[in-house]
Image (cartoon, rainbow, N blue to C red; front, top):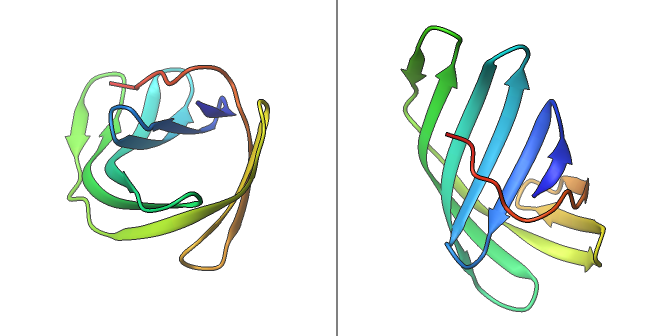
Length: 102
């Protein structure tokens, strides 16, 4: 799991799952689920398959759309740096094993 409270990126290669989460304290979140495929030593492709806005009283389903890829250009036990299909560079800190948000 990469990130911190506020914005979290969960990558579970074994489960072929990626999850982007933006939290809204105290109990809200926007959660986007994706399937992933490892395409090489650096490249991972993804396709969005579910999204929801979570509030204290209700979950709101949002139609997911989009797909893309990212290349991991550096990784060690604590940091991962990736460049994505849009040319963005993402630098994230490892926060432990994957924990999927529901």
